Length: 361
Image 1: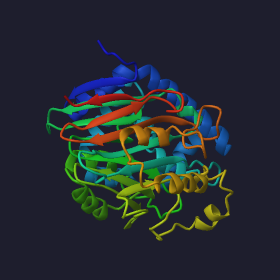
Image 2 (image 1 turned 135 degrees about the vertical axis):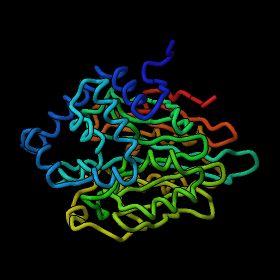
Image 3 (image 1 turned 45 degrees about the horizontal axis):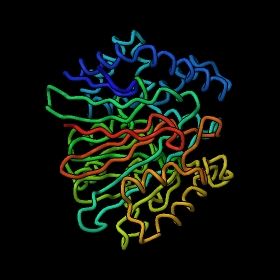
Image 4 (image 1 turned 90 degrees about the vertical axis):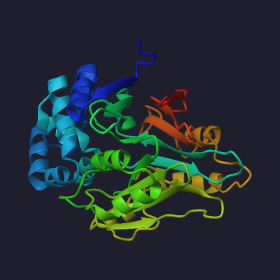
């Protein structure tokens, strides 16, 4: 019997994984998508149907998905059938960051924080974690999916929202944390973030390999990729066709990030708009970064699992937002990489909800 109502285990081919996902989470998927439609319609002043039609007309992500991750389209078909939801709607539901960029003139949504550390002393594990901050319509839909693919033999833990194949997560050898950076250049024909994250977890067994793959892809959205393996933790700001490593404190072997570019200068045309926004409208990205600059520089506090959870639970800035805040934290996770990697998942704001630990074994 499943112990936690946010945790699910699925096994099978890509289509079978999607089918099981759709069937098991159908009520939650329907509820979350219904709220999402209202949120986008009210925020843009357009009917959701008109907005979706324009979005699909103005973008072509499918070509990149078919090139790089065609098997994930099988998984989406499975979710569509399992949840009894139109396949095109399930496709759009995956494109969290791409939709955010598309409606940026109407709605500003920017808020996630990442912290990590490595080589912090004898027998200290590598650690990487983040908060996942999204619009209010996603509250209550956070799930942790453990999947075993019978075609590839790959085990993955997906920290995500019901109906979305991946947002962040880890395989046995690589972990991925994402921070949206809307100021960086994007491509209406690039590979969307959700699919890139899964591709990294499915095919890369080291940070180095993931870095090479990130550099070979045309990216749909500006993003910071926090990466962890059993040797190190690194973070890369990626625009449509450029990648730059951000090294906030190489002498401390730590990384942290929020939602504005600090290394990559391949900006999009909207950069003047972003620079003109008050910090509060940009999700407090500068305030949160200033907080992490201060806290992460304390050399005598190693970035352990407990320290990462403490920072990600902080109400200062705030790092962990709550339902009444502008940009709520819908879930949080911390990954610990040892011989037996472990993922700690909070299905809500970690300032209010405890982390629960999971391993592959």
